[in-house]
Length: 249
Image (cartoon, rainbow, N blue to C red):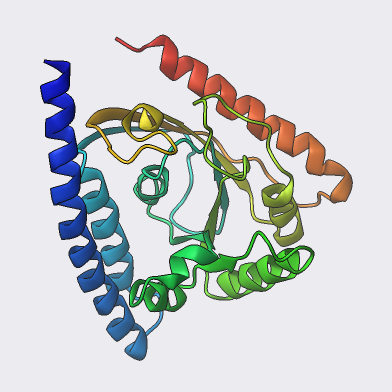
């Protein structure tokens, strides 16, 4: 029975993914055309959410969001989340109505049409091999995002967790929050690792639950506060994960 189930999952993955790629190219083309007339239009934001929902339908994914943030419709924020799977980015897009952008690895810019769409949307391109220049590139991208009224999503672990456990947070996201005055919004994501662990080629259906926590204010803070709010965000996300795991059926 397990063999047949795995075979079915494999077949579905290799059928669904090519169809999804075609769909993404279609959506990306729409974003590029819209950007010729107006950047960050309401229709472009709608396309982002269509992409996110479509991504989750591939598995398919059951998503439950517990929003405790109390965020208003206005304002710009730095959303920080644990990172378990490729499903995390589309999930974060669906957690809020704010216009959010992420730090995109240079590798995804090798995909024609999709790369142009990322540029049109204002995603922040990063090259982890570029050494000291990476900070300058991020700062430039963040400033452009702020000018466009966009919020950011950063995964402070730096990469997906290979074990499913929460890793140590890097400081970059919290420096951005302090430097820009944008509050930090912690997000706990549970369930995506079981669906598509790093290194796996096959994804599985699953139930994902998310807690969006209240923001951590950064106004008036300086460099000496980076460590404190980094630890605060880590503790908040860890507590959220513990709560979500404790209610697993």
